[in-house]
Image (cartoon, rainbow, N blue to C red; front, side, top):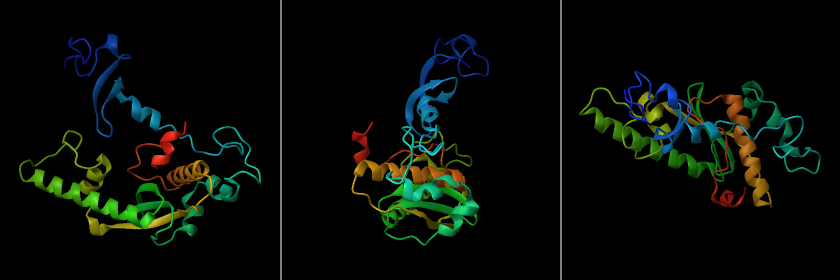
Length: 222
């Protein structure tokens, strides 16, 4: 194999020994074109860091979570990070805002956040169907498919699930109902703390990154 940076022989490695800590461009299965260091996508590396966890009774900015803090009402659920504790709050899917889970039998496959869980689940089902049709079409021509190398029509996680499961085998649950707050920033923060808490509790198979705000309003916040 030739080194991605200098083009010299690197044996079985993607970069040679001299450039093992040097940035280079490659294709990430999740982010597409991205910077890598030693086969590690730097965007993935950054996003795997769990920021939205309560530590020492403080939020991610170091503020104490007292009775006046917007997280206080939910503190027990945001700190008891076990499936056994959280399972009693599981509900059927509805149009509420909060955190949902996708399951195969008792295995949690994916955890996400939404301001309308019912609508978001509909999107997941459509994307899963698209990935399934795409993979089935490719199988007509190839017996073995590397999903990291095909041009994706939907996000990578849908191909992972579609390769392993059928739509009728999946179930959907509301894991954490989040009430709307008057302050948009606090509301988005609360959703993301709740998502990270459910990721820690249910350990979903296809959440490759830690929780981050996903709503458009969050783009204005640092």
